Length: 212
Image (cartoon, rainbow, N blue to C red):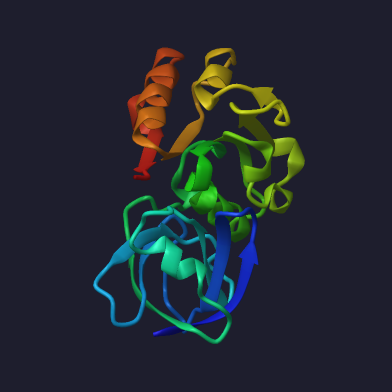
């Protein structure tokens, strides 16, 4: 059981839950399972915080008819939540790659593992492309180097690019030696995978995590 220590509301539906870490070991890119005490309903959330931080954070978007996120949205500091994990194979160890240039592509709350990547390894050579509908969904972009982030907005023109991440990538020259990490909805991942391989990125340089 982990106690909530803070809640940061980012939009009407998206928020950061910060909780006691209790020395929970995790590798950046992994996820935990959250469950309201006494409930059997549970949900997977990528860890949002860095490996070296004393707290554990996740980014949650409330799904109105969901079984878990509406209850999580009601949590306040002092409340408790059950945490299982960590799990997952989207683990990130930049020193294991032959080239040290990274491309991160995310939609919506799929930005979570990349926030953890960058907080764990602040000197990374990376470019982050984040696709959302509206500019207000640029979840804590101020935590990233603004020169390394491109915000794609499909529902308004407040981003750096008006359109989807796939529209943006289709127009770009992409170095074939990039290590590419994709996190978001399955449709985006399939389309971006095809775009990247079509531009010469080897299949073995593409790593994916699907959000449902």
